[in-house]
Structure formats: structure tokens, C-alpha cells
Length: 290
Ligand code: PAF
Image 1 (cartoon, helix red, strand yellow):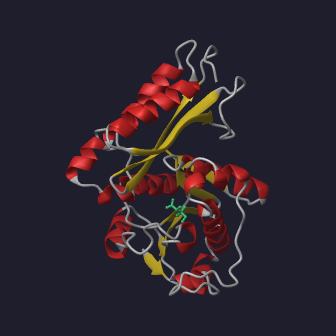
Image 2 (cartoon, rainbow, N blue to C red; image 1 turned 90 degrees about the horizontal axis):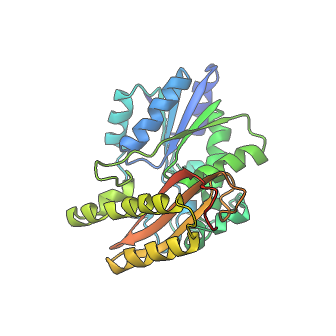
Image 3 (cartoon, helix red, strand yellow; image 1 turned 45 degrees about the vertical axis):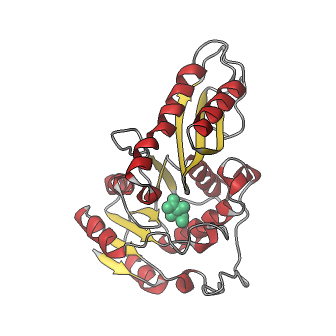
């Protein structure tokens, strides 16, 4: 496995690779990431994993400075998984016009994500998906993969990346990896590392709440607004701070309507200072009130 830090070196190395599958990450790899790497390996002979904590997708009050950076441990895991290349650029390599010391964009050009990026996670993280779309576009242009793999845990991110590929006519097939979970049902996330033991066991309630909503939503006469509000109240009453719980069309991410066949319930909520997200896709019942 090669570890490469510059765009020029990576381009030179990849020039002769006919078939590349790419997994973009911010590092601090867990079983969820390794599942994506495995999917990549099933699709191409050359697997490239990027490790880059992207400053453009963090808001001013978010955890950029403290985001876990564990390059050596990550590389060990990736080597064991048969990764061909790790791309770990510096901020200046990725954004020559960005001032890393002051977190100032300067003349950095960014992609403007579509309006749906302002809903759900985007409502409380303004500009987050502009930052994600920008870094992913840059990484795609640098790696030029045939396949790129993203996790379904970040459902809204996956949706926006698919739109990026569709709307900018990128010749890349996006593959989606299922969410990996702890035995309790808690979705694996780099942010789980911020949780105390007690918080980690309490955090399973997020997934349990979503499972309960799915059961209720599939019953006849289910009212989605009521389900969302009751679930939010119940989590808030047990010490969470719910950002949103929302039942949406899995195809468009717009609020669920009678014509949608496949739905997704998405949630973001804070336990202590840690913001967790999760979602479950499910088929629509004909009789629910949306
Ligand atoms: O999901 C992530 O880890 C990041 O948002 C991504 C896609 C690597 C872009 O920085």
C-alpha cells in the first residue's frame, strides 16, 4: 500500500490504472468505513482511500480542531484490508487559496449544493453540503475513479453526491454501503468516540426510536407529523436534544407524499455535546396519512 500526499504524485501513480474504486473519508476509520473499502475491492483492482478532514464542511462552532486524526492507525487498517493507495493531502494541497490558520476561504471556489441541502442536517449546518460537494468534486477530479463508495448512514450526503454526479455528468458509478451498527443498533460513527460509556448505551435509543416510527408508519392511518412529533418529544424527555426527525421520500428527500413508494425516516439529535444521525429506509404503506 502506498501513502501519497500530493495531487501530482497521485495522478502520476494512477495514470496506468484502468479500473479504480474510490472511498473518500475523513479518517478515524471504523467498521463502517472498512465495509465501504470492502465494497470498493469487489468492484476494482485498484482501491484508493482518501483521508482528509475537510475544513469547508465544518461550521464555525463545530469540531474541526478536535476532529480525531489517526492516520497511522487508519493506514494499518487499510493495509490489512488490501487498499492499494491512501491519499492524505494537507489542507494547502487541497485548497491552495484557503488560509488554514484563520479558516478563511480567501478566493477558494465552492460548489453550491441544491436547496434540499438546506433542509434536515443542512438546516442546522448551513454550508455543510457546499463543503462536502466541493471536496468530493475535487477528489473525483483528482482520482478519476470509475466507482466511488459512500455510506447510507449519511443518507442526505449520499443523495447530494448522487445529484453532483448526475447534474455535472460525471462518469462515476456511486455505490452505497449499508450502515454498520453496534450490537445495540447504534450506527457506527467517528463521533461515537466522543461518547461516555453511559452515553453510548443510551445512544441506542435513537435507532430504537426510528425502528418504532417505521413500524407505526406502516400501519394503516398512520399520521407522519404526529409520529415525528411524538418521537421527538419522547427523546427530548429522556435527555436528548432533537434536531429533527423527518419521514421523507427516499428518492427525492422531499417530505413524504402519497405517490412515494420508498420512504426514509431520518434523525439527528444530540446526546450531551455529541450530535448523532441515523436513518431507516422502508416501503410506504398505502393507507398512511402524510
Ligand atoms: O462522509 C465523510 O466522511 C465526508 O463527508 C466526506 C464524504 C469524506 C467528504 O469530506
